[in-house]
Image (cartoon, rainbow over the protein chains, first blue to last red):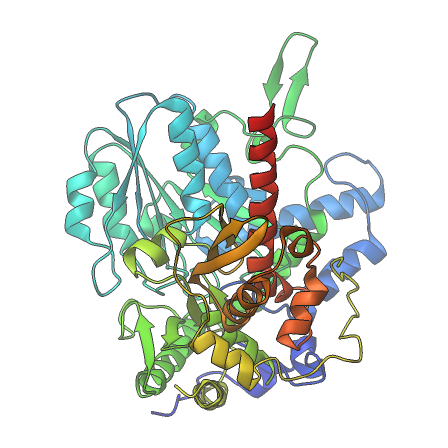
Length: 412
Length: 145
């Protein structure tokens, strides 16, 4: 099947300097978008503009550049809010999904105790597992795991069984960074809310790839990172329902997040600044705002449809290679543009190293999901390709040819 | 050997493009000394969090000399071949000489150069071995005291 090319990929590729200049003297064939996306020039320009033309701190100065910086920083927040259908004051800038999830774990678990339960899934990235696991050790509550089925989907029967009146928080990934599975987050939200539990979503792998509406999902919190959605590193987002954020205690204390401070006590700033202590990543937020504009301009539905075509094409091609073992769902239904696999008899690191010699960037290893890879997939490591809208079916043909080369070199 | 963190480093000139040489692939597919020992003086497991590779090395000593050595674990061609070659190399050697083995010596055994990322694969077994020796030394010192 040829992808229908709903997008003008040749034009899109020109938006990314790195796709023009290449890497290590070769054109870059980038298939590690699950780790980080490439950054279009408009995002770089927006950040440069801040540093070159109105470099100042926000929320403080009464001079021109500081006011301009504050306006741009807050305008970026507004863009992000619109992008996921939230209110502006429900958008908190963090340094990434990991910090967003840690903020939630520390703030929401403060009053949990023995007998309480937090439910996550077996397919979580370490960032949505370790914070809850470690807080559980401190507070004495228990972490329970929604099981993953043989075909790499969440077992919703298992979810129904383990989300009970003891459950205080349910936290799950929207799209698995290993399996590509798109989870039924609306159903999980209902299951959690039926038991009066809060529902948190790790959306790092979803935000760049599909249209998002947090009101429609009815999640209580949604976390994602700028650098996986065409923005810069070091900026991320925590969305939370206004009434919940109002009730929560701050995570980091310091400047900007306070209202009044005396030697004996402090009171907190209003939302969203209550959760943004210290000078924020101003250029990063502005860059993220530009990234959101860029994505909206292409259209999230267009991106989702195009990447599905790529996924279909890649699944068919990879399935056809003898000795390639695929993990996760084998059809495009409820699956994002992520494919994990192994080449029988070759370690993932060797596969990725040999592909690198041809300018093809893929990921090998445990993908920051060691429990899933080791205890559910029963392997030590996997190779992963993850697509974005600047990838093409030709890229996948190159990938397939390179995997054949690996097999030849290793005589497998 | 210190890690080379120069961002512009692309090799030292002697860098051979092909790290997947015939002999490395042979050692990977049919590693020497693979398995474990029931009687050993040194046993140490080392894990590479980057890629999940892990190696456990077992060494049996008699009069300060290596009389048996095995390794178990899993990893990429580079880490497995390095372990296979290094365990061959230390057989019959005295502890004092083994302690002197450095990254450069392992690279010479492999006959290749490795970049800042893959060097960790190549040195996984050496690091397990050296750390195991140090821990044995510490244990023995504690017993004497």
